[in-house]
Length: 547
Image 1: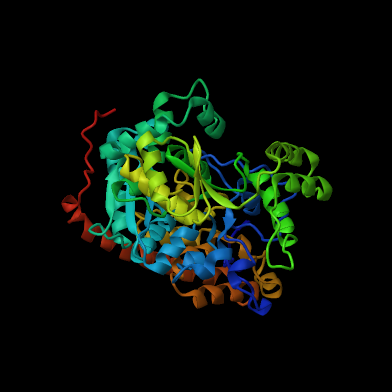
Image 2 (image 1 turned 135 degrees about the vertical axis):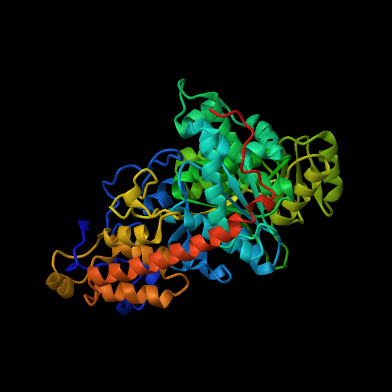
């Protein structure tokens, strides 16, 4: 990237496709400021650190290494998608389908995200503010939290500093459109339900696990480790405050370790596990896939001319797996041994409800709830007439009726990191790299005018070759913020840039003026909320000991 002069191009596209491609413009170039043609080969291994300075050189590696799914694949199923979704700024998700379905069906769902008050809120934080507010506007129960315990333990901020920054985050969230009467605002330090839930979740986690996930060692203080389980409690809190329901957590990809752990802990607290099964013995996921493939082939061949079907037995499936070898021998060996041991037992698809942590009363209650054909074993129940979804709901209700949480796995969506105005990652610790939501509008104007761009060395080359839209922090400002809901405007800026019609000087002047207008309007709304802040159900003056 280069420092801009007036002769260079100014806009770069994070999420658009050149008009002549005839495809969706959000899918061709990258919103992280790196080119879509960058090769993953040879790239540094991706390391996601919630408290570090994680950056992502190739977002495709997150799909491959961490199992994050591509958001674009479910975009069409999301009602009235936010422009951050349409433009590919929100690029990935974990299990967002239940949230999208709840929106389509007008069912209950929730959104929650938190802010560690370690500095001024800036335009990078606005992404999360906007995502919370949009989900609230779609009918979700919205939660905005101040992660003050984390700020104190992991970053060492005093409570006076935390109070000051917390106030600023809440004011900006409100000024951008959060409805405090329809939503919930809280501080970790003041929410006893969250603290109690963190204590219970801590029983399901151990030091070895936290060390493996976060790199904790003998030098890590206990409060820092405690802040992790507190964040797990935050993530699951909407389901405790009300009822189990689809819940989405909008975050940057550096927070994915928290999401994976929260989903694991949610599952560990459940009274019952629900899986598919084919015989009385236990099988892992790989084994079940192999049995399913064999059963499908054998059951299709079992039809007789008289309309009856021959019974498919475990020994038949074992023989089929030996003959067809659908997987390496090591993967087949364990399931073949189990099938051989089961011998002539019939293979029948079923849904299995496993007793994980259930009380005796809860287990008996679940047996009573299941109608139709079922078989009861010491530690599980097999049902032959219920779908997996219906069985899971019965298990959840039995759990809730007997003192359990009944958590649904929390979902997450991931947005790209904004490129700093000086290049590299936008950082609160580098004032020139970001625009604070508290910046004077004139200062915001000046920062945009001084920003690095993806422009060419000269205006002549710019006109001839076009700008490097996928490498320009200034274009990101248009796509992430300044174009707002106007996709056509964002696309025009991109097309004019890569087509050589737009030069950096004019483009930055336009962006700087729009940024100044945004900051002025935002701060006017902050002032309006300042007068009403004391009326809200959140204490922004901590009574904890000052340090």
